[in-house]
Amino acid sequence: MNDPIFYIHIPRTSGTIFGNILRCVNTYPIYYFAKEYLENKNEILSNEYTLLCGHVPYSATKTYEVDFRYATMLRNPIDRCLSHWKEVNSYLSIINSTLSLDQFIEHPIYKKLFNNYQSRYLGFFPDWTTIAGTNNAEHHLIFATMEMDIDDNILYTNCISTLDKFEFIGIKEYFQESVLLAEKILKFSHYIPRKKRTDYSSYLSDNIMSFLKKSNEVDFEVYRYAVKKFWEMWHEYNWRSDS
Image (cartoon, rainbow, N blue to C red; front, side, top):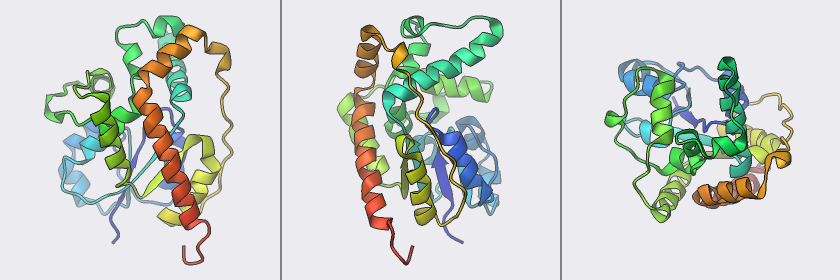
């Protein structure tokens, strides 16, 4: 059997719909969060799965001696941040406590969700045994908002090293092309849904744009590298007759 695919689902990158496409053509156990994944080693290793996917950062997958074929999807950092803000507000609305974007970037916890989040998933290697949390959401929030005790240059270098190990890299802004490329590389066939780009321009004051650019300097560099890798993969596989 081929090594299983591990789809690293970075939140708010269209990973849910892309993961659903992968799950239609693979057998898998459900490990959507790092806490579940880290606590179920024996069950994971005993299954003849072909795919794992979920909100599991790359560093968490390296805690087990398993050879994975890695895949992920990245997104323009500003659009990803604004989508994350809207998602958090959808939960806060349940208790009638939504935050404006200006309030969000001043919030002591939530503003950290705008801090090089994609790079955190790909290039940050914390000691997972020290991350507490009684449930998946709490455990994930602790990881997502903890201080990254490395400078930006090291974080960027780590991300590039990680992406160079990935068999497939998709880009949300090129979603249809990403699915086509995944079909070639990961060997499956599926209907390709259309994804429209959400226009967030009405939310972007000069102050917010400045904050997002400053908070995502590494993410922008990593995103540009990922786009470059994506098109390199595209030209390599598009369209080899043996693929």
